[in-house]
Image 1 (tube, each protein chain N blue to C red):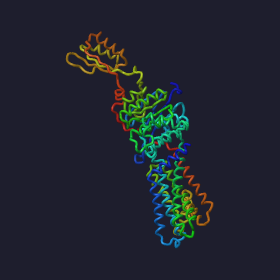
Image 2: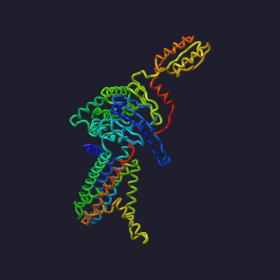
Image 3: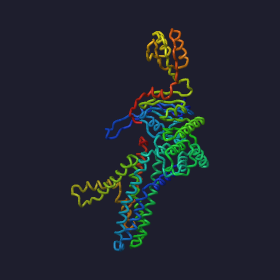
Image 4: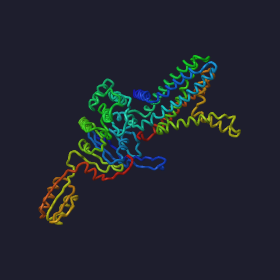
Length: 249
Length: 325
């Protein structure tokens, strides 16, 4: 009951915030893009993958922006004092916020996936269903970004939380994108190890593979296992929030 | 006093804060060995200059800030116990209410989180507290449309939901007009009549004087003075005397009766002014007898009861330390 009350409060806050502007403009942008491509069939699945990648970047941004103020801005505004003085555990507060954020992100992704399916999806061979399910799988990296931002939010002020989330995301993406063929022979093993280690902190490649699965490509068990990292980041957030000494400014 | 009779029993509370990296991770002490006992069913005032550690103390009592040392018992148990926390109402000094909720929606949220009011009773209880803080006519309005004073009254309403056993009010009248302040005073007195303990942190000394049974004056993170405001017999009297022919023997005799009363001025014609605090009216009578019996002529004798403001200024002086509050 208390968990449900906090989920509802979080959703109400997100609904009334200015964060709706970004997801809505993505829908408008997709409609405009679809209307201006002369022959989508010409580009086929490449067009779909490009749209997914674009949505992925915006999705991560929306997720990080949504979650980065979840705890820190409540502490900064003083609303956390009223909430935490009630007989509600810190875990319940954080779980309520995480569930509320996840529902909000899911609604965004479903709206994006439906728009993509109805615009470009209906005009290419791969079909509307492929476009829809592929876009829906964007929820995985978005949840990962949200939980990373939530962890940062329990420790840092709002601006620091969004900044550090995006910095970590960018850094991991850059390291993951280094082609081993371009690395000096003596450093190949070292870069490979770094990519492997960071792949467990933020398994971006594995989550991207999940999306490619919608195009009929193989999905490996470790791609699905990568979803557990979302839970691990939530556990980190819980741990930091629990040991945090002060909930006041 | 037995611990079962105490609503708050804090002993040896200490809170250190680390300043930021730029300040070289310096440690500052906000609360330094504070002891505070508040009896059930009484109204206890918390006074002190800015930065004395009052708000940090309140945060530690509520479990919002972890003490560096010391112990806190609230209503005979730990504030971490959800059943005890459900019996505590709190109005923070600085707060922001969710602007997108209505006044009623906000109270419903807190009634749910508090968990003490049965679902069937919830609507009636919310009506009661809205009526109590005169916000019934605005109950369906979004909080964003309420004035600061109305929001403060709404925060007070959430604190008294379900009539808890302890209510902690941190500057509850800072945004209220005189009528609102009077209403809060009446509310505090109502709570006391219902057996609710109230801890009131306020800079408005006249307000504290009107509603509190006891006050604790905090300075530099410690209680430097505890004072009972009711009954009044503990209140010190400020005595002023004007005496002609005041011999050294008379002055010495007066000082023996009340060590605080000393000669404060001499005037031509062998007239002396004496002033200082005496503990009781009996001392006033004894001093008058000593002056007349010693051959002095008592030209004037006046007494004033020391106000809480006098006491506060005497204890705290004009110290404006910038310790963390």
